[in-house]
Image 1 (cartoon, rainbow over the protein chains, first blue to last red):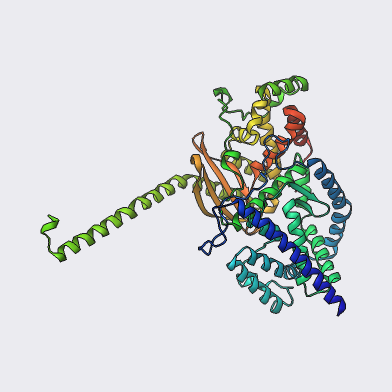
Image 2: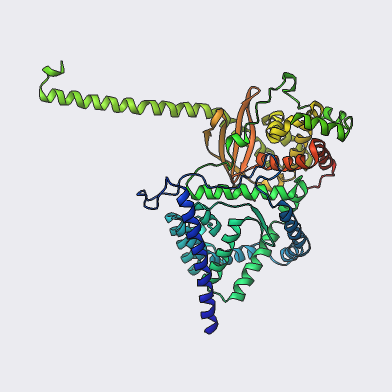
Amino acid sequence: MDFRRVRATGTVAAWLLGLGLLLVLASSSLAAEKQWSPGDSSIAASPAGAVEEVAPAASSGEKGPDPWQKMNRAIFDFNEFADVYVLAPTARGWAFITPHFFHVAIRNFNDLILMPTILFNDVLQLEGEHAMQDLGRLMFNASFGLLGLIDVATYMGIPQNDADFGETLGYWGVPSGPYLVLPLFGPSTVRGGVGRLGDGAGTFYFSYLPIWATFLVRGVDIISWRSEHLEDVDLSRRESLDYYVFMRDAYLQLRRVKIDEARGISTQTSLEDDDLYFYDEFDDEPEEDDLETDGQGSESRGELSPAASESAGKHGS
Amino acid sequence: MISRMHGGELRRFLQWGVFISLIACLVPPAGLAQDADALTTRPVEVVEKTVGEVIDVLGTPGLTDAERRVRIEKIAFAVFDFTTLSKLVLARNWKRLDKAQRQEFVPEFKKYLSRNYGSRLGSYEKADVEVLGARVEPRKDVTVFTQVDGSDFNGIAMNYRMRLGKGDWKVIDIVIEGVSMLANFRAQFSEVISREGPEGLLEAMRKRNSEPEEES
């Protein structure tokens, strides 16, 4: 009993800390964003204007979204090492001894443990509809779904939402800060890292299981998830020219879309049009109009020494 | 004339006036909406046709992986304009490539893409694709919104950014769940170029393209 109480006060303290941080950050950003006031009459008011997101595309490559690239790459390499030598082999074994439906059940069970935190974030993001849906999921899956093992809510047509605390912070205008790779947790930003702390505290606070069991379920779910994505990850690793940048860009794009969605900005693509789809009008010479000549290009290979091409490159820029 | 009307006539006149001006207000937006539809008709057709053909090939029994790949490449290559795609993916860095390098980059990039997507084709088996709508973008691009039904990618949103070029609409980007493939490649390529220059990028692509492909 004592144990439970200690745990409860600890997690409440963590939440209060997170909330306090949220309020401080939100108020400072609201002060900067004058066109939106908390007393805005429209109910669907989401803070207008774009959040200061890290731009996923770095055209120069020097600083851009990733000023801490050196450190991030080191952590990323460590994570890759941990994945290749620990997580992936475990997941392979796991996939060998457990059937797919078991992974699904674990996933559902885990989702139920996460659901109160998601619900909490729905409320913080003023997403009334999502909150109702997630409350419905929580109730139906906990009861008819046998403590979450079966996802009856999906069969009933209740969509699954996922909201997290990093997203909530973004919703309230907290800038993402630089890209940050977290040890073991992977791609994130400074804001995402704070969000993870908040969500972690929430998960353990709201979980109806003791701490060790919550850890266990989360751990098994991660292994289970990894075992379902063995091939995808291998393909991405093998195909990308720079796996670190592949992951960084995919993460930053996804986050941007999710936060835009939460803020009611429908972008569909995560980048500014001018950023992505319009190269400078480089007065194209007509003969360059179609370079799609298979095989021919390879003939010119090797004619240029790296040094020569380098100087040509410098000249061009 | 109005001054000579009786009260009732005046009211009726005003009512008609209001009615007609309301109609007049309503008509132009409807007309514009139709224009937008007209603009998106062809790009939507192109996406539907292409996706339909690919699904047909995937559903054809008795094809070897290689045969399948050849057929799909033929369909896919018709809707991509690889020169435009190369310029878009390299953006400002395109200028850093000299003519020979550009001439080499385009086919290498084509090969690179075809290998990447070719190796993932297996996951699309038994997939169906539903066109949800389309939107006209700035500078007359059109985005076609689709959703995958079935297969490993059930429920995934796949949007095709289309641009009119060389006689028909071409795909210039595929946006999967909000992640632009073009932007992702661009980030990677720009990283490689900033570290190793254009020749370094070409070298990396040559190396990647000459690796033996794994059977999926």
